[in-house]
Image 1 (cartoon, rainbow, N blue to C red):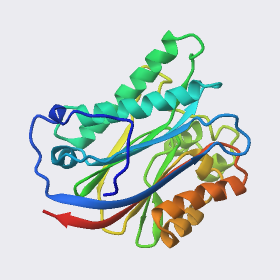
Image 2 (image 1 turned 45 degrees about the vertical axis):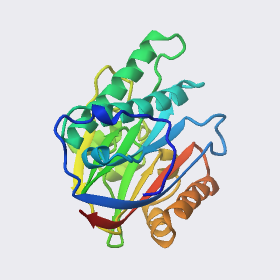
Image 3 (image 1 turned 60 degrees about the vertical axis):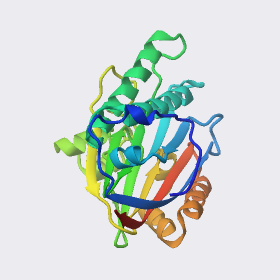
Image 4 (image 1 turned 180 degrees about the horizontal axis):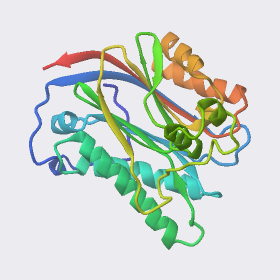
Length: 276
């Protein structure tokens, strides 16, 4: 894996009580980019990542990438995103469970509680919140933890698939059969979140896991990207360019398409899986 710095620090001794054997090491190449956009005065998006050096951490938790998109006005949304990313990573890597999906669930819920508590206890922060979308590459699996309407995509065999749910009012109506997909697309309420980090003291994240395959490409992005670029544009850029170049082009194209919001993306490519 590439060597990058991170603001998060973890104690390897606080990992899961049961030692997990490192059998598969996914080689990952990634790139990331964020931009304030063309209309906003501050960037409420935040991305973060952690690539463990310690084999016990690598075996039990893998490498993690997170994107958050804040809301709440002034600097509140930016603070919510900062708190959520740091809390998620801290709890995920220090949780005692041997199951990374269980740790991801606990980490997402902990991030929600922390942002909710700060929102209610500090004047001027009431109502702040954010989305949270995280992918952890743990041996031969990828684990998704997700709240809100930022997105996670997987590209495999030349096809792109959104693997994150849309936690919005209209998508909830579509899932219930009350509204059609076409009605949802043109609804004035399409951007109203039904789940967000910090909106309520408790939240139910989407947590899923899949097997990874060599040459898979994963994209995490805020809605400043997904609202400006169609899926096929993301597919084309992420498959024709390396992850770093793709991340820069995706954000640049989102700005050219309107840049009406902060735009953030992480592109991760799965290279050979090293069998131990």
